[in-house]
Image (tube, rainbow, N blue to C red):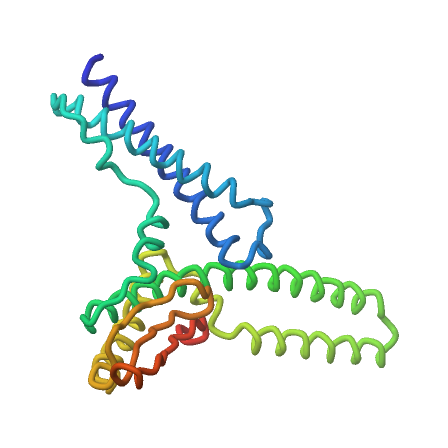
Length: 248
């Protein structure tokens, strides 16, 4: 196989992986909504299939890259693969390293916040289309009401109320949803950094031990820890809520 052929296959495989990762992101968004926001009717089986496909494609990409380098060693098992299994493996890990567990908590919160923003922007787009349809209907009614001043005034009032309600309900979302992925991640990271510092400055470290993070809830990230010793130990928790309005 010539170098040119290998390079073409690498480029093709990278494009394939990007497409699969975008599909995986859509499926995970659907899953995190409890499969309620699921326009493509994805299932758990689709999630497993796409993860397996990404792993296979990454392994094949690694083989091509090794061929290009002239490396015959088998490093395909070290290639990329979906991170969901790794998250599950550390889900119930208990540690007394407060800084490490706070980093894990913030990472979990940032991931959930990113998904929440994507879902909120989807909802905004749907609401905007509904608003435009309703506004166009009122405009048609207004134009059809020539000669009826009272009717026209009522329609104008409805139009103004519709616009004010939409702007109030979705204030800040047009700007948020226009952000690039990099800019959005940066904004989320800034918010996460503030929360991390707040937790590090709190008294949780002094009064708690046996820290762990629970990842199950899509609407929050939960830090669980124990206070007291022996038979007097009590489990407490601190919850970071995933609220898109915090970024507006």
